[in-house]
Length: 478
Image (cartoon, rainbow, N blue to C red; front, side, top):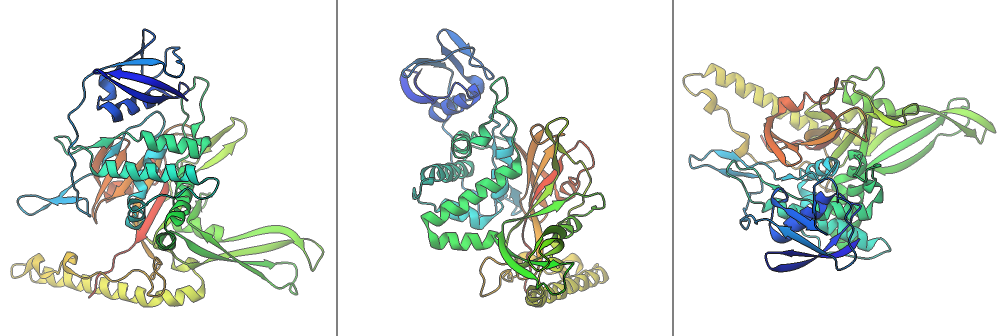
């Protein structure tokens, strides 16, 4: 890192430059300081013009001078989106306001997709928004910088300037810099010094773990709640298949993500998850005093409000020394039911809410039947709209942040397009409301439907679902 002086419009700015990084990142800093968009910037150092891809051999000492030419944009005007990310037209209809996009700073789509997917978890967003900061422990400073950078990024996205078409984008420079500092593995470079593509699920898991840890240091009470919304419990039973006298061993662990393994027979998400809940392994038996076969059965003892699932699409190919991709088509549902994966004790607790869901669905079917019979007298107006109804709590009364039905609704998908984990492109697809979704392809954000999202199940070189984020399924009072 080198401290340089940037001169622009008669003013001087002290800027930290990393000549091993892409110049695009440096230009993103200049944009944040001066308001001059990267496409308008002419950066000159030592008489050489700096492009987007190379520093052109330029390396400056501390205090070195860089000239910036270019005109700034108008000062961005803050907007105040509603909590549902929608506004009303003059005719009273809801107008969809799409999320702000994020500029790609050079193979940073994995980070952009991860940070977009977090935004579908309102409890996590509230905890980040109220974050005050903590630097406790040896890694506290780095964790604080990362959390603060994410907080600042989300704030910028909420107040980003909207173009005439309603689109908006931000440059996530501080978040990327903090990510590289906190997790150096994401700053790997190729032979030309350019940033390499990274694994989006690794980024998702590492950053989520960091946020839960750092939020607990800042506010233990707040963290306890947000952790409950994202963390489940799994019980394991290990039984020796070769000795009836050896008692089963039981254990319990916490989890924040389930895995779907794409074996040959797996065509649906639920099967890919369930198949790994029972497995055979070999280990030393204390009774037989030799290696023996064991069966390990795992069941979910507590369901969190939000559940992420990784489609395990990548495997290491020794011959080519790359993480190759499984392009297999595996269908995933808009509504995920994990009842069969739970312990008998938890299943018993889930039954009352599941019965309420069934009663509600039966009533909706009856309303639809009646509305068809009454066409011309009442028509569709005979059906009561859900927007006017009260929502039934989706957590157990004595366990905030839990799931009390076993039903989940799809909230976000991170897809990968390409043939290996260290190449290709990541995109986030996030739910806006019951029917509308947004495709967040870096700074290009567009409106899509749920039907289009379900087509992301794989089977070719098109975008394949890689990480799925499920949240509470809404139930309205009858």
